[in-house]
Image 1 (cartoon, rainbow, N blue to C red):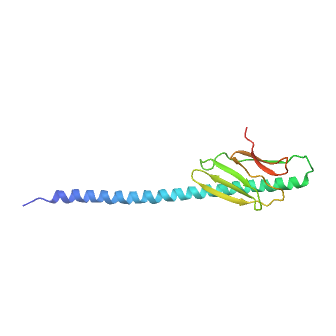
Image 2: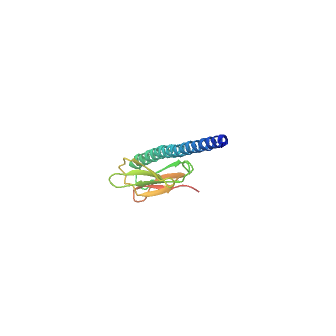
Image 3: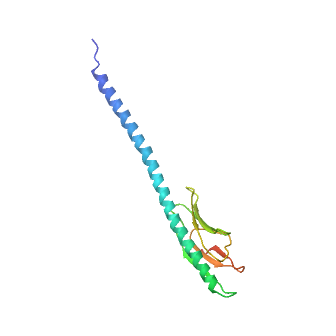
Length: 149
């Protein structure tokens, strides 16, 4: 006659631990993806806000440039945060027939584009986040510049 009573208790314990480990691993994997998605959405929303602010500053500088006479300076400045959700970012304005403000982070790679309506030509330029200014150049173009000290 054999005694199997001790084996079933140990086997139940090991199976219970294995099932719990599989469930916890699955929850951590699903939760990790959820947190990353929320972080990316948060960064994208903040970049949209920054892009809208810079776009409105460019349009304000455009209106000021239209009302100035020759050799007058135009400068619209704004203080922006140096980082977005712990990541550095870059702001660029692109000229041409369809001018736009592009704000992008490098880690994670997220980019947001905001259209700009101006009658003053725009010189393509880019700066890192922080204190920025939109200036009217000697060639009567609007340029984005870094105003950090």
